[in-house]
Image 1: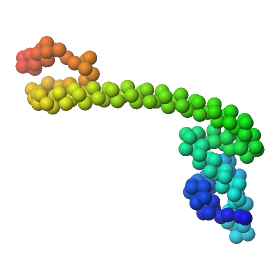
Image 2: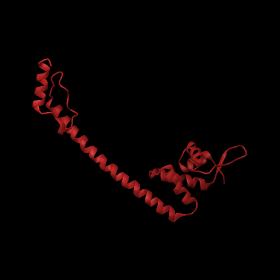
Image 3: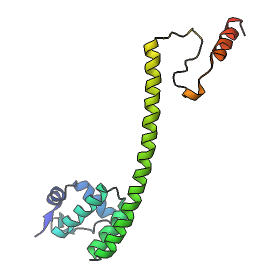
Image 4: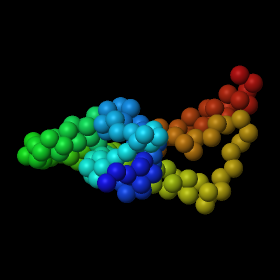
Length: 158
């Protein structure tokens, strides 16, 4: 039984445009054509598209997906499993690094929020001309002496 591109797209949960793109980049073989020029596919191509879609959901690149699809299409399941394991372990390690970075960012943002809340609660008004330091790192805050000397420099006309 041959399926047209719309039917294949619906079954594989991808768009017809995606199918044409995958054919263009070699991830899918060129489709057979009907006498009237319609692309024709089999259930094998639907399964291939589903595999590509799952690989994409796992965060694999098209190049990585291409390797996986090739192993699957040629029945090299053991090679596929080993290669997929290696790729997924790399993805997990990268995700763990990203999570650590995001946790640090979260803590930095929480600290900034706490600092800003204190300023809002205190409702401090700044003298005109004194730069706002609300986005300074807590370690970089100017001492009262620095603020006083800045104020003195402004008042003395320097």
